[in-house]
Length: 269
Ligand code: PGA
Image (cartoon, rainbow, N blue to C red; front, side):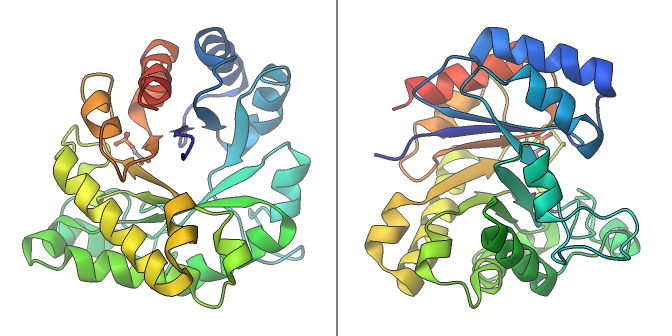
């Protein structure tokens, strides 16, 4: 039985006071939940604040990104060890907004934004390896653009991203990972992927992992769906056999809505 995960990606929201208030609110709603793993991923500036707020709870802390080098002249970057020292146990890697797509549903916009953050399959792979080597658990993201879906390339794109993400990583490492399927056109748009289709792609990802590492490892892996998860659609998503939870942006910024998502995840198992 895979314990469901509900992970809140706060993105570039919340100064320290707001982060404290939101963490306190989540704690009150979901701090002692045992049937689901709750992960909060605040901006780096608020990691220590949130870590202190959730200290006596079951809630875990995650970073939103990291660099693969251990230290050095990399202005603005954070290493895995730095995230660990802030109390992180998880790190989101390869979010579409870091892959340079910036959440766009429009290919033309995406092309313009392609170089802003610039994560690629190769940098995602390096980051996942560095996280695992340091003892940080990666939540590796994948997902197709709208144009890729419309062209019928969803499975090929996602399979390619997953294989590239896992390239050169041994089974012990992969067994510690979480994968998040986040169709880019569904992120922040209110347009949730149909639950059956999200489940189909998550199942396809599980099949790719099984092909590389065997059924047992794939059966144990948590695969999340992300993209406009909300209290009114979470039950349908959580009812799906291959969806083990959510990676949530907008609805994680209010304690009430995120609390409802956590409860739905816990109830689903
Ligand atoms: P959203 O973001 O829930 O606001 O669509 C999801 C994500 O980017 O992880």
